[in-house]
Length: 479
Image 1: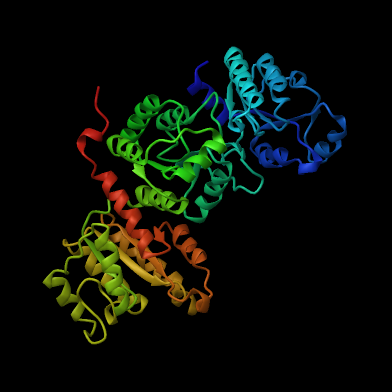
Image 2: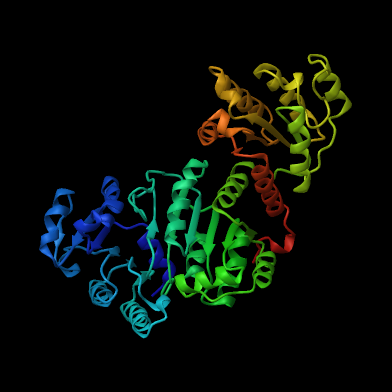
């Protein structure tokens, strides 16, 4: 069984079977994968209990009592039956010659019981002898939003040109990443929640994403790995080709114990893990937000450079934003004398600053802000422009946000080699009551990178810079 070929088949199925859907759980997996039919795919409901057939028929899915009754090849099977029944369904998968099966049920080796281990051993034996893949057990399965294959019924779908692919041992985290990505301007290509990873583990998914032309950035949430040396080799290869963002939990005794109980993942000392990431050139992250914002910075900004021009909303924020970016290794140089002279020709120094950060009259109002950003973009002292906006302020006036988005687009179009990013501030959110995520979404939709705080922006941009400027020995080696 070639795992990489098998993953290509299950990630791009033509026929899907859902085994064991029930009215009691509102036919969860039929509803989750239901959009697949909108893209030309076929879904069969498999259930030996014919009392469950009418509900599936109401949803528009044909019923059969066995996988073997489906009159065409089956690429992907979602299994939602009790753990003790799983081996019988897998035997049918082997006989049918399916591409792969996702096992939702828990109750296997992660329980630490003899029965659980026996059931997991049976999964591996049947899949290996039957030459098909198993995703899981104890997981939410595959995600291909372009085809409507989803790990949950509320997860978004319909994206055609995603660039970010992820793998997660946690089903909840997988669904959170899938839902948070579009809200943060990220288009997902593929995803998987793989749980115990009995047959196909993190190393296999990483190798697949590394070779996948549709994947430009890889994200991972891991509790542990099955084969350390194999994972190390796969990570080093993948990170030499494209950015790999790794969120590894289990650095404390308590979290390691939780990971072992969840997916039977053995703890690895945090120092060893961090050293491996450094040697491989992978990027360490510590939250969903950091993963997604770094992915956006890598894809949209690329290399932000080190010299930043900062435009702050106030004098108080100018010191704060300079500290924040300075602490992440950015230089905050003064504008050139020519730039200062040009800004002084249309803005008063009183109540503001022509230094860096820029704030006050030179950045007040859309027209003047655009002019100042243009001056800074032409200044060779700067690699990157960062414009801070008050999330509440830009929503107080009609068209204020739209005007600023338009001027940023124009400045970026005039200076395509100098990245422009925005950071949002809301010092008193309980008073302002503004939808900060909604403001950010308008920037995303306009193709402009936006971060929900200066701190989050500085961290993501620093990680992007470090990846783009990594040592040459971490780059792909020619044959």
